[in-house]
Amino acid sequence: DGGITQSPKYLFRKEGQNVTLSCEQNLNHDAMYWYRQDPGQGLRLIYYSQIVNDFQKGDIAEGYSVSREKKESFPLTVTSAQKNPTAFYLCASSIVRGSAFFGQGTRLTVV
Amino acid sequence: DQQVKQNSPSLSVQEGRISILNCDYTNSMFDYFLWYKKYPAEGPTFLISISSIKDKNEDGRFTVFLNKSAKHLSLHIVPSQPGDSAVYFCAASAGAGGTSYGKLTFGQGTILTVHP
Image 1 (cartoon, rainbow over the protein chains, first blue to last red):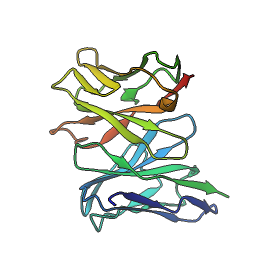
Image 2 (cartoon, rainbow over the protein chains, first blue to last red):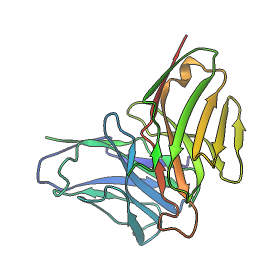
Image 3 (cartoon, chains in turn orange, purple):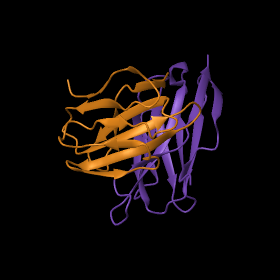
C-alpha cells in the first residue's frame, strides 16, 4: 500500500543531544514537508522540499536541519540548538501544489 | 505573522445541524486552499480543496466556499455527525512567481464538537 511512514512514534531526548526523525514515502511525491504542532496551536512549517537535493526553510527552521538525498526520504534532525524541542512532529508529502498526505507523527519529549 | 487565521478555537453543534468553520488569509499570493481534519495524536487527513478560480466546491456533506475579495473561506458540513468531531485546519498555498510557491501554510485549527 502507498503511504507515508514516520518513525519512531515516540522519542525521548536528553538535553544537548541531537536526534533524527525518519520520514519515508512511497507515493512518488516530489514535495515533502515537516511541521511541528504544539498544544493548542496549529501546524507550523519547519522545512519543505519540492525536489531531491533541494529544500527551503519554513517559518521555524532554527535548531533543525534536513536532507533530501532520495525522493522517498526526508529526515529531520532536531539539534541541541533547538531550545524547546518537545512537540508533536508531522511529516507530509504531496505532488507540488497538491493536497498533502500526512504521516502518523512522532512525539518528541526532552527528558 | 499569521497568514492563515482561524479565529474560532472551538465550535459546538447539534447532530443533524450545519457546522460552519471559517478561515481568513492575508497573503494575496495564495490561490489554492485546503481543509484537513485531525484526531489527537494522528496526522491530519485531507478533506476538500478549492482553487481560486472557483468560489465553491462540494464533496458529499462537505462544501468549501471561497470569497477572494474578503480573503475568506469557509467549510460547511451538512448534516453534522458525531464522527465529525475533530480539529479542522485550513491551509493555503501560493502560486508560481512567489518565494513561497508550493509551501503549505496552516491555520491554528478549530475544534468541532458534534453532540448527539
